Length: 351
Image 1: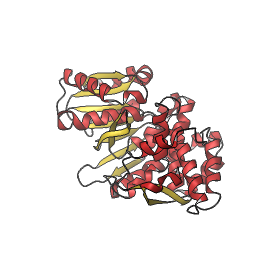
Image 2: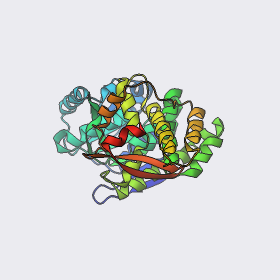
Image 3: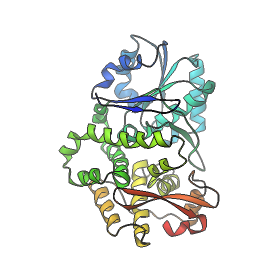
């Protein structure tokens, strides 16, 4: 059973990766939780697929309430969050009880933020069901909801008590959303792991799935390694946002409906690398390599038509914006990432 320790000064926890883990989820939860009440926050798709299974497994040992939301980015709102608070309070949840975030990135972010704020903090566990959540959003304690002005603008850092990853849950994932998660795998390869990038270019479809558990482990290892050194995202952790500055703009401009998160990030990675390559800041040919791997995994790379003023306006609210400048994530070549401090008046050159 591959296990990673996230060793933080105040909030250490384990990431456990094991096929079939959902079949003994109660056993793993009892290792970190001794009370009896559990609130599961999930969405309609996951509830339909796995709701009976997880409820049956947990109700042997715990009193369970399942809170089911509509799938999709639009559920990551203050309005939906208020409804979740009300259901949790109706369940008479206390600070000694437990919340399970059982779903993809949207559920993980929303449930984690609810846990971090209700009653000034309730323990929670991440059980990610999408590839994107398993390799990225479930690890590191970033939790948030969106505002009309932009993505993840209301949030906090709140580490889970554990992250329990069952790669078998990916078997029921829609193909588009599997490739959505592959965008984040490609991100890790671009910024930190040239060998993984070369593997991704060379894998057959069968080899990709045969190596999926190893890929999940490698991505989680890279993320936890950075989180341990920069838990609050003030320095090195920002490199994990490669492609995200522009990706978040694309998501917002199309109202989170045309592009998935991974698709938007894919476009962001290629577009910003193409521009940084043209400016002599990135090794020639790097953007074309990114284009090649994105195409292989059925991800877009061409920038859609968005008014430049709207791009700059949205970037102005980006969390990496530090007053007169923004920290932009660029790569020198595949596997080598750096942070470029750019004056806001010059940002349009990169977009």
